[in-house]
Length: 383
Image 1 (cartoon, helix red, strand yellow):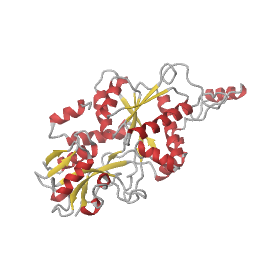
Image 2 (cartoon, rainbow, N blue to C red):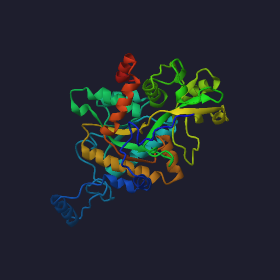
Image 3 (cartoon, rainbow, N blue to C red):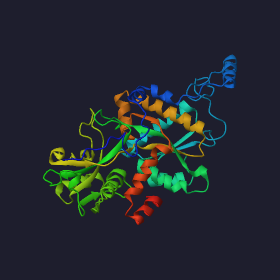
Image 4 (cartoon, rainbow, N blue to C red):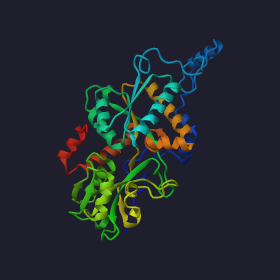
């Protein structure tokens, strides 16, 4: 039998557990933007607001800055976000590059209009390149995976200058399922076998079990299952797949390995069967009938949006609210949902901090507990 998986609310690394379903629904319809509302105005701020009204100027609700004749926030004249110092955003697409590029260009244009900031958005081909730019101060804000976030933390926390550190300020929200509480805020990996495998559950995994994994820096295809095997005291025989999830699924289906390590997400109306096997349906239409899942790893948080610590809190605050508003206005239309699919299948964001991801770092350290060389490579990897 398959081992009963832990709830993400009981797991080692969920995002803030007090986020309610009401907040998530609010994010989906746009109300969640106000999770980032500014603190109550001090008397000085009220006096400034009154003076602005009397002078004919209007304060922009999103940014707190005065608006121009078109009702948009006046761009800063100096500092980060000004024309001379644009806010540099970095992305790695999760879909076909051309489609993702068009989506990200529209997002950057929208963010510039709504925040008044000058923004430079660029797509890079790997998270290693994004980490390199974060470390060297060539970007200000990055959209990372959980594993690449951990690599960036390890790469920057050791620097002498605290401004080089990174700060998580948003966490992704995806479609969850009621039978998996918290699955909108976290994800896990699954272990795949072919139907006639003698392996029925995690208790059947023994030393020497042949396992197909992906890159050592991949969360679902390597780090999470490695942490699972370490926790259960199992030493597997690992085959690394350079071809991603389709080849991992193929290896399990053909019996080249005993187990394939794949990503898994909670089923939803659009994807009632929602794991890496969907990448093999074109060549194996019956893949969900000829294979089965025998267990799951622990849950880890969905990917964060991070900024260098040198980015002022007010800038992070404004960008967070604008990103939430952007997602909320897209998720309610078919076209908008297709756009979001191209950049990560999001339905919203919730506030996040580095502390929310600290347990994730512990999971990763456990994954490399018996592989000091791999651990060193993970920390310094830029590929």
